[in-house]
Image (cartoon, rainbow, N blue to C red):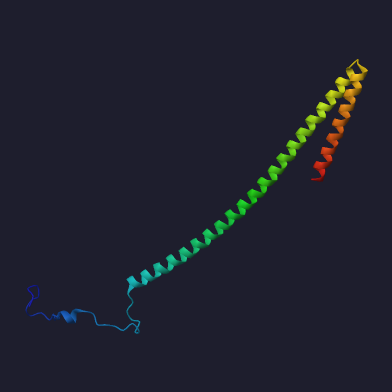
Length: 138
């Protein structure tokens, strides 16, 4: 007998085979291994979180794609506006040059030079008008 047990005690000493808990069939449902239950629950929750994260990432990728397409459309629109603005600035400069040339020709004392400049300016005005029609048709 072990020394910690008094000799007249009613304590029963079990053999090592008897100390093990009796095997309980899984079908009985009386004993649940909490560690395995918690682990299964953690795995299930992690799977749900992983699915949710995957869904959020897909949605985010779709939103980024839509945003990129919208930005490309805006960029094309702005490029078109810039091109039209450049054309307008060139046309305005040509018209200003034309007015200045008309003013200079009117101030000349030489009639032949005035006529020559007038003809050149008429050709220039015709070219400006053709450019405007071409730009409007494009």
